[in-house]
Image (cartoon, rainbow, N blue to C red; front, side, top):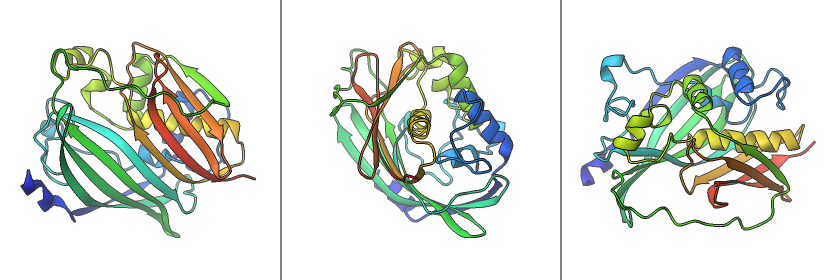
Length: 279
């Protein structure tokens, strides 16, 4: 897989407008009559609703993603997941503003784990407005081998502390479809149950990693009105599926909050740290 390192340093740019219609859809999906973010602003993580993929239909692979190659390296492993992110929010983005994104491949790291071969790809994004860089994001993607019959589940990890804030979510296909639609995400693991089970070996539809992160951010904003988020880091630990409930959890810290998602067994599926300035 050494040839994949040739992709390190590759860059691409995109332009968009922070259209308010996308934010209206996000608020609806999150069940908000009055969203807990400042009117006229894109909320933290709301930039994921922009710079959507534009692959032609003939260029879509079996899994619903564009064919491999191009900007991202052509990793010949079938399962692609959003592993985590580190974000810094420098200044707000106003609804309706013109925005640009500069993306660069920072790292390509093959590894061997208990579940077989993996390749980690780190992408740096800089999202800017006319005023300068608004968000710096390091996006971690992991490619993995297909699940095999009899594979042991990912080891579980219990939360390190007690939750002060909690919100229970019962995933369903409509919620997953609405988020896929908002982000123009064609990945079949989120809506095609037969494909999930028969091709990628999952027991149910996969709950989007960025949707988990978005809901953790939303939990914080619900509990801390007026807070200005300056940083956010999250890491996916275990997959979540539409066949079981999940719980959003959080607790305040001196600099912001510790947040996590637990699955139906009480294991941590995603962990996060948030920095914020409270009003």
